[in-house]
Image (cartoon, rainbow, N blue to C red):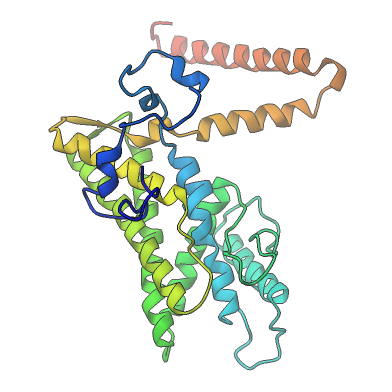
Amino acid sequence: MAGTSPAIPFDELAHEPSWASTLFQQRPWDSTPGMCNVPHDSDAPERVLKYDMFHLFKVGLGRDICGSLVFLARLGYYDDPNGGDDANIKSRLNRCFSHFKLWRLASHKTAAVRYFSKSLFNLKRLTDFAWANTKGSDTMLLLEYLSFYVTILLRRPNLPAAHAALFPILKKTILESQKAFTLMYKHGLWLRRACAQNLYLRLMSVLSGYQHLAQLALTMRMPFFALKPKFHGIHHVAYEIRQALLANAKLIPNPIMWGCEQGEDLIGRVCALSIKVSVTTISKRVLQRHFLKKAALIRRHRQLRSSRKLRL
């Protein structure tokens, strides 16, 4: 399996990676998980387990890219050019958040995150790899802001060579991730071949860009863009698309079908509802309100179809 030996690196980005030959050769567990007892594939029961782009990127690799905010802060891009600002990381993150908040208000965006801090970016020490412990929606919002700000920074004259090399790659990586998710969300369960090819290239571009960012950060001796298992997981998603394309499939499954966004949203709504009812009757009251809402939606749906003279 990938990463278990130097001959099979988990961060390899070839179109036909060395770890591909190890897929489904042995079970990746000591005791069979309950989900894998569901009849699916007797030769490789682990095929029933799918990669979820929400957790791979929005609360995965995307969070690590959002750590670039700390990167920019440490490079002084939120400091007063004339001097006078505190250079400690806490003050810099406060100024960074103020800048983000200003952009958010001007763009009419909303965010759950209320401040930037060392704990938000998981920084016990400045030698730690920064990543943003944010909701998936906030991750995408921060990436949008990063793209905006980096575009402005690239217009500066006399930008240090290392920064001038890294910033375009950062912007491109974010852009490719946004295009990949837009493509997945705009399609249904199936992708036509041209769309699947497009998505495959977008995902590989994200991985290639991220890997390049990690190399540049290492050259600058800055601990950012850590290579983690979710990086490898996204490559698995891309590789499955490529395999389907090579098999001449007319339609390719959209990876977003395995996404957990809706499930996460449902849990959030149920949680919000549960804190509004009595603890002693929480299960009963939550279910009652759930079915009341469902009944109202069904009634509204039927009235709408009836008004349009459609079959109920």
